[in-house]
Amino acid sequence: MSEYNIYMVNIYLTGSSGFLGKCIVDVFHKQDSISKIYCPIREKKGFSGNERFIQLFKNKNKCSFIEPSEFIPSDTSIIILCAFSVSFNTDIKNTVHENVLPIYNRLIEYKTHKKLRIIFISTAYVYEPNIQHTNLPIQVDYCPIDIMKRILSEKLNWEDIKKMTKNKYHVHNTYIYSKILTESLLVKLSNNFVIVRPSQISISTNGKHTCKFGPLAIHKTIKTPFIRIINEKGYNNVIPVDIVAKTILKSLETHEKYIMVTSKKGVRFFKALQIYNKFFLNFNNPILFYIFRTIEMYIYKVLSLFNIIRNKDYIRIKQLYLNYDFFLKNHWFFPITNNLYNLNEIKHILLCNKICD
Image 1 (cartoon, rainbow, N blue to C red):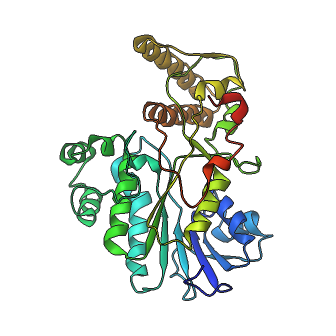
Image 2 (tube, rainbow, N blue to C red):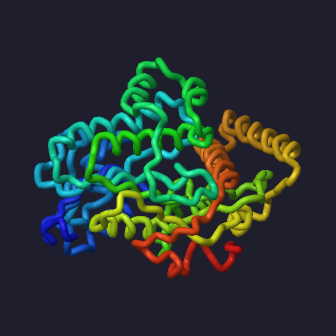
């Protein structure tokens, strides 16, 4: 960390209570070069932010709780913007209000701290499949501040945005567009930044860290013998969460502004699910696929309405389908390796021996 005093690096980490955030805390906490990790955590489900902080990090003496509404501490060296909900079907106004606006407000605040390095965790899927140049900025077509304000004031709706956007891949869903919009804001408002673009973040190589919608968490939902309609075609580009966290750590000392974190091996999602439940069907015929998927989701909706299954299980399945339908249709493997971390050395990528082709 050549730009900073090696024993005085203080991190301000948003999203520390999330899947990736908790792994970042674990990785960073072991580093002698990091003195303190500020964790702004909001109130949720009746628990205050401080109560949630204690539950998560009571044994992490480098971690300090801070209210999200407070200004960043003056001794902060690096800010990592990791808080961003993953939902592909959220209304664009809600997506921007929940994800983009808080980051914009922080960026305005950070402008008074000129020495701060800002690291934003974006996604590799800001790029469309098979694109060759992945270390370049990618931005919305017009002024990002203006677009954000017009969306929030309801002067722009999702249909308007799709019409005015030249590259239609950028408006494939509101999640992708909101990431591109945030990257554009960062480029406009800061000179000292790094954008890290991981692909699908999954369970850690040691199995310690899992996520709500991750492949190895699916078995909590798929215990019943109901039909599961999965598209067999396509691959998932999966990267273990601890590899992403370690790459973010490496990014603290690089002068590169755009860093990809992807795998060179593809995972067949259909094979991954069959490890946990054999009651899966796949259809190559798109019409049959649509019919059976619609029937399945209707059954689940009815069962949830009568409390035969939990509503959150229905929501989980619906979200998984939305996410993985997108990933499977837009799979790629970049020819450019991440020069900060040798991904070819990863021996464990989601039960690699069983489900990697």
